Length: 269
Image (cartoon, rainbow, N blue to C red):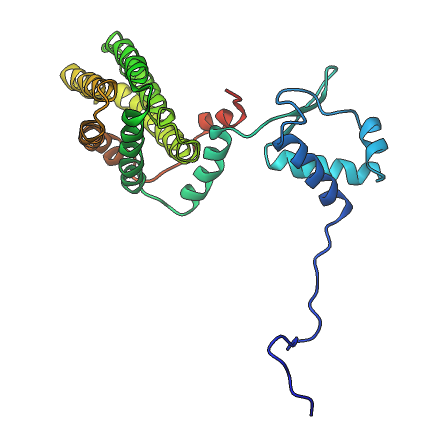
């Protein structure tokens, strides 16, 4: 009997997965979209043009379109001005799909808040370490001033506060962290805005004094970043998140992807 070597195939020949024609076309178009060769918001070339580039049948080409549409990279526009529009990925599109995952797993809002408490203070720290920390801090300070003008409107105030936190995440200066924390922030903000609307309708939105406390916390975060003090930026951000996220976590129980959230996945800016 021949001795079997370490690299011998034990269970017969390995079956290789060969992509279908549609998958191969989708792969090529996907690469063009992600590499920027196909511009965001532009129309995909017509079927006639693409059939000259890809020796395939119309059904295969249309199946490739469907694959990319499910990935959010293409959207079909119906009617007289119909066409297939290119959509580059955004934090919102990614957040939508991650949101589906956490919703399906029954993730609690408290669990989501804990993850946010870990990532957002890190963003504040990196923002304070940037060379342009002064201008970054001043920009965040201007956003906190805009919040102060909405103290009497709970939903508008929550919207402005969400904008502050989104900008704080983007101020990290590390693109990978911005994407990951931005996805988390987008999911959280959707839950928070839903809570705000319910709290206002039920007369349970936090008192104006607490809203002023939130504005002051945002101002202190901005000042710490402007001063280039990462330790203070982390400390104030962490304390602020702990003080404010409990309202949302206590209200909703679990993360849910809401009807009004779905539309955000098509945003391109």
